Image 1 (cartoon, helix red, strand yellow):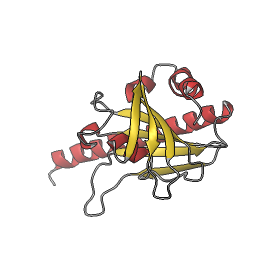
Image 2 (image 1 turned 180 degrees about the vertical axis):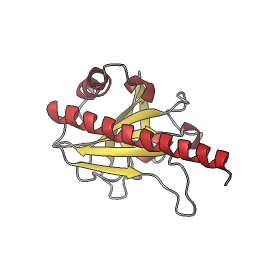
Image 3 (image 1 turned 90 degrees about the vertical axis):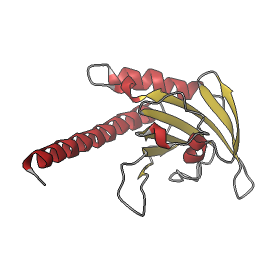
Length: 181
């Protein structure tokens, strides 16, 4: 690589490293707010979607927290164009959070089986209610998983704004107002 290309590569790498560090910090703040609001027990799990055949930028980075009778999964969708045409969250082309609450408390880390299907609009019946989507995912075990989901632009949580207040009003308060699963 030439010096100019190497400098550009290094700066891009640093930018993405800062992006993921910022997301991790934001997830920690969200987790603390969910615990303070008694929405979760504090048990958490994280995942990054990846491609087994070659390195690629992830479409999303997700964290989940266990509640008493549900799981809350929050997906930082970094590349919305890769989500697919059937996506119920198609209207927002910028990076965003998709917040999913589903009724299978025993499935903390099951991103592909629940939130990923909701985001991609696969294997479930759904109803759009105002700014959220609710429905049931058809599970292989026949139980069916009830869910609610809503989307927020990542720009809701930018530096210079009151991030704790945004977390409270845009995530915690909305989760508390959702119908019981």
